[in-house]
Length: 93
Image (tube, rainbow, N blue to C red; front, side, top):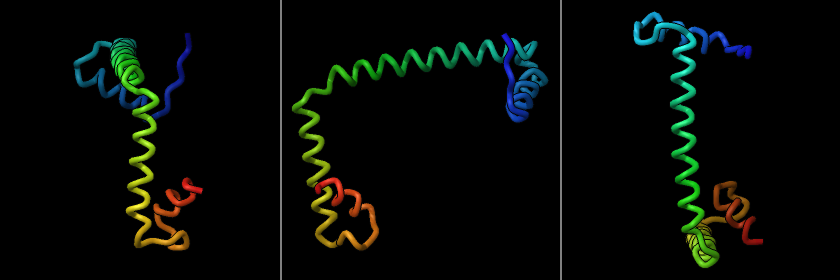
């Protein structure tokens, strides 16, 4: 396998080795990939848990709350004002 890193990443790897915590660039990359894999697994677990909690009723409730907040913002705003409310008003159309 051949891997090409940007100059910044190569410098970071070299700094890690020179710092003495790692013995070689391979060890730095290996550790980085293990940490990445752990993070991805945590993310996947969290995403699965969140998906299990989302029901059609909760999704509808969330949209209703978004529109309620949009209505509250729109009281003093117009579509021509160029603010975030414009996007909310556009969603309501």
